[in-house]
Image (tube, rainbow, N blue to C red; front, side):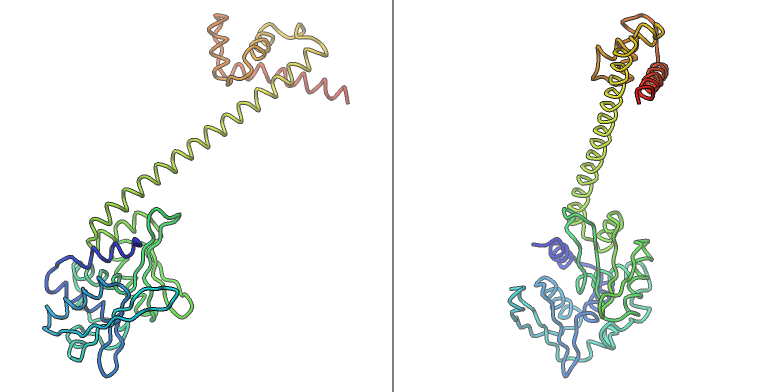
Length: 304
C-alpha cells in the first residue's frame, strides 16, 4: 500500500463539524465530478469513495448509486463511480463546473481552508513515501486559475508551495520535508504525520552520520598524504646530505615522524612533547617540516 493511500485512508475516517464537511465535500466534488444528465464522481480510492458517499448522505440525505469498474490492465485496480441524480447538490456545494473557484464563504477561516485542502488532497493529491530518495507532495489540476487558488491557500499556511505546468495540467507541489510535515498536520493526518516524522528524523540522522564519516575519511586521507610527503622529503634529505645538517629541533621532528609514520600532526606533536619534555604545538611542528620540505625541493631542483 502506498503512503498516499495510507494518508487518504486515515483522513477519510475523521469526523469534523458540519461546515467543515460541506467545504471538504465541495472540494471533492469540484475535482472529481463529471456533470452530464447526472453527476458522476469517480475515484480509484475506495476510502475516498466511501467518504463522498457518507458525506453526501449525511449532509443532504442524498444516496449516490455506486458502481465498480476495472481500470486499465497496467494498473489492475478498480475505479469507483458514484452517480447522483439530484443536481441541487452542485448548488449546495457551490460547484458550477469542474475546477471552478468556490465562493469566499466556503474558505473564509482557517478551519474551512484546512477542510478545502483536505478535500482537494483526497481528490487529486499524492505524497512520496518518506523512505524514498526525495520528499515530494503534489496536487494535479486541469485549470490554472484553480491551481493558483489552491496555491494561495497552501501558502496562507506558509507551506512554500509552487505551481508548475505539466503537459495540459497544472501541478501544485511541495518539496521541503518540514513543509510536507506541516501539510499533514493541516489535514489532521496525525498517524501518518508520526510515521513521516520518524522516517524523516532517521534519514536526517543517517545523512548526518554519513557526512561525518565522509568528513572523517577525508581527514584520514589528508593525514596519510601529508605523512607520506613528509617521509619522502625526510628520506631524500637523509640520503643526499644526511639529517645531521638540520637543526636539532628539525632533526628531532624527522626522527619522530619516521618512528610514528601513521599518526596525525596533532598526535605527533603531543608524542614529541611528552617524550622529549619540550612542548611543541601542531603549528610549530608544521613549521619544522616546512623547512625539511624546502630543503628537499632544493635537492630535487639541483638533481634536475
